[in-house]
Length: 164
Image (cartoon, rainbow, N blue to C red; front, side):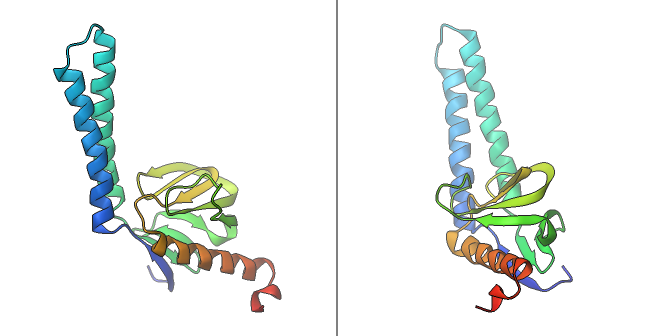
């Protein structure tokens, strides 16, 4: 990125392994139950096998997604590869409250205009006017980025109050 970085959000190797390992373990357990346990209903056996395969697919997606670093710049929040999560001119509010529907150790960004749905398991998701950051990230990494974003929004919306 050419612009000044204000902050970075990434998942540590340990958190990635625990998150992906838990999902892989669930997938393996569901597959085992679906294949090795005799059942009266073929339907339930199929549901368990599909759920196990879905969990394994999700673990593979999470591994790829959590390898990416999110970068906060003066223009907005982006993935390291340039994918736009939200530009500052489209951000209405940053919400870190305990009752916000947000990922673990993360925060919620409320947008002014809806953006296309996107999901990076364990790192971020966006639907409509909501962008949620967090999951396998550390609170010590996400909290400063949320604070910087909040401060920039205050400076943008009320320049006189920003100096307080």
